[in-house]
Amino acid sequence: MPVVSVVVATYKRDLDLKNALESLALQSFSDFEIVLVDDNGNAEWNKKVSSIVAEFKENYPSVEIQYIVNSPNRGSAKTRNIGIEASKAEFITFLDDDDVYLPEKLSRQVEFMISGEYDYSVTDLHLYNERGRLIDKRIRNYIVNTTPEDLLEYHFKYHLTGTDTMMFRKEYLTKIGGFAPIDVGDEFYLMQRAIEGGGKFGYLPGCEIKAFVHTGEERGISSGDGKIKGENELFEYKKQYFSKLEPKAVKYIKTRHYAVLAFAEIRRKKFGAFMKNAFKAFFSSPAACVNILKGPK
Image (tube, rainbow, N blue to C red; front, side, top):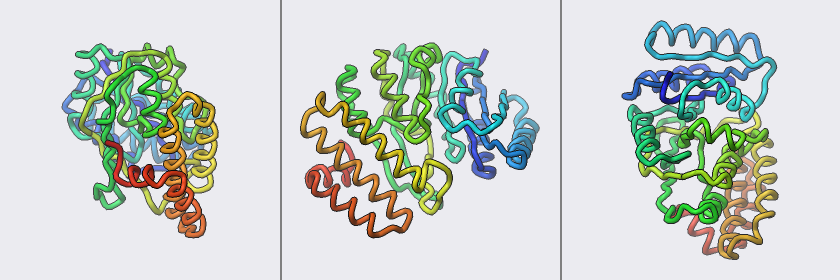
């Protein structure tokens, strides 16, 4: 049985998917399987992905890969849950179909999980643009305490995401129910479930992935109107917890929300909406706005 399963959900990507899979084949850690779930729900795209898988198997026959096709399209959360259910390993991690792992990703995080007997863990996150330029670093060194209460506040303020940085024991991931059936922000809700589940959490400093931000892309529900709708729904959800948080944390969350909307609108070249949300971000808390621009400490 493999030690770790890498769940890859794919939707309307071909060259990016090839790069993602190849980055897995080049891992220094060899005791893993790939669980690739094709959520295209389209015969033409299924054929493309099937061809990519066949080529991958020919080029890397020693790498175990499960290929699962959804019919019809199920959305990102359910697709990842399908991958989780099909996985055969003790540990589970994820790779988005447009991102890549660096060669030591699996070895470092698996060793960390085992040595600390953690139920789940995250690493830092580095974001790149389409040209491969590093544009943002999300360093989690603000994590000082790991009680559920502290982790929840960190998560609501800064988001202990994305999926590429997460690793779980399958037993714990199954216990907390996997991904909630919400496609925009599904990784946020998963991490909240993990925190509230009381499992042992570990933070592994450093980043062994390259996550790409597609600034000109309007693909699916994670961009465009779907992105705006999902962010607003998440903000309304967070409001339920405001009474449990310090006022300073609430101000930061509000400011972050409007800053995220402003960024989403500038990507869509909607400058009026960008200005509106940028002003809201600043006037919610000028100090928090400056801190967000600097990044968490």
